[in-house]
Length: 367
Image 1 (cartoon, helix red, strand yellow):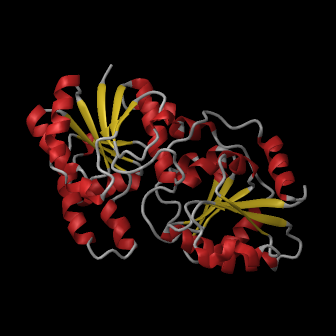
Image 2 (image 1 turned 135 degrees about the horizontal axis):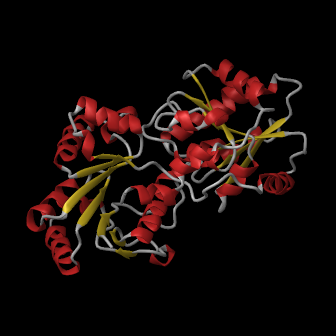
Image 3 (image 1 turned 90 degrees about the vertical axis):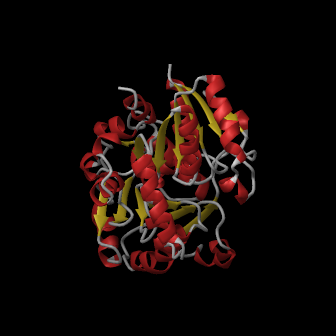
């Protein structure tokens, strides 16, 4: 069995964002196939890991990113445990893993969740050019690269000259391997919980709501998409908004309760809401990488209507009619697409699960 060490530079257990969940589930399934240890910050709850060991060796403060004492500590660990592969989640600790490689000869994998400089450029961070150079050098030095989205791999190989044979697609995954059979039952339960009538369609959106791309999307739903839907006199629906850290200026969405908006706050089991959803709304206009909530929504049976930006990273060829995209900012067409497709909800294709089920993803890494 391969012995793998991963460096996760931030808190992710328990998870409450899509990125955290992606990391947690990837490690859990990776631990089923390898002897895995994860180095991270002390705020993580180690009782939530089942298949691997978490080591709280990183400092809680931002200074962890420049903590050179980690070189000796991790080098000793690698030699003592006979670890053969180190995975660097994001490129931030690339300087560290390459220093360890120099001392041990260990194989280095960088797990690129996005092209990071592009994401921070879209968020208006002034220092993105510095990150761009660092990220490019890191990709070139790595032995292997895991990319979440094919578009990111193609950028790296086409623009930065990264060798194609060291690039592997490791998409955000889901924990089910086939279309859920309990969608109807779950929908009844969620509808009853929130007072939604049987004839009303359920639209939904979720995410970490103070994250800028999600905040922008929420504003679009509340102030553009929903007013357009309200004009459709024969269309009966509710929009369920779920997620943590809603900015205070939204006032818990109280002014929208009479406008077909239901705000749940953070929910422990978001999969139930995906199963209950007819159409998941994904009007994302900024931010990079694959949108994890969209992957889960389709996996649990919802149809997604998305902007082109929001659909980036998802393999559209295996989604069938479960992913419907419209040009960015064309909200009239966005609403028209919802109305025209609300009555045609088909099962998610089996090829989707072959691609996005976590168990299948991790097994492909070792074949």
